[in-house]
Image: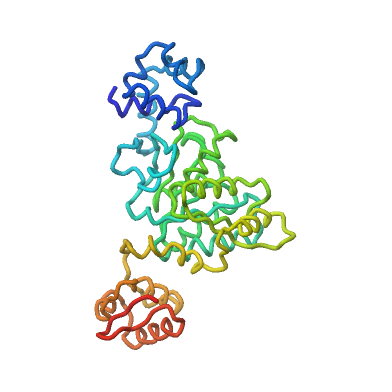
Length: 363
């Protein structure tokens, strides 16, 4: 087996986890040595123990061959942490996964990502806010990351997809056990407009202990995490905790003080999370990251869009670096008088200003 295949094999050992695997790699140097050392030497590594050591020794080449064959059948890519396509944000967190299973495509532009998480038993208010905010952020070229769960996660993914944006779903199980089952079709749609990823081998079940591991990836992929609704012991609060540990931003949508699903979000705000009432509250915090990178998606504005949508498209073409009005006009498919009207609207809202020499810049 190649070193890459050996890493995938070791990742298939149940209860191994990225921290234990990294510890073994640091101790023995290469995956080949890990697979060949005597049982007693594996036992001697802190945190391994006889059970995991026994599972490593029982690994068979045919198990790995089967894993790769199934992955190919499911149209999955399996990458390790040395791969050029490994997400940059994820590599910055402690205990990043050594191996990732991917359906779809991860892109460099996904570095500009925001996680949206919340209750599985969300209110209508929470669901509509998650979908609306995800859509508005997607239109501003941010990738939406969530966990494919029922409730807020589902609506966050859908909000991004409805706007033609990118979204990434992180699973707490293997691809042979997509959870929940009713989101299998949604997972396929996400894979066509982003990616579905998992650090778990294909046959891993959606066991409860997997989801905190999944949550650290949701926050780790993202510049910040927005919690829309969360009860007292919600998994969304675990994701927020991981975001703080990883040095990422935490946002929270306020809710009614007597609502069960508002306990977590209101508590986060009391602890210093950024209160979100509109998408600009998020963009304000992320602007050092977002506006230093050029948008990847096309910027042609179709005539049929509503005024607010055209306004948003135009705003997204203007950055904090002054740009010539003529260069911006070339990217638009609308009449000059309407462009002038849209620019005036943006200036009245104090979102942009015009500089001498027909230069436009964001405020």
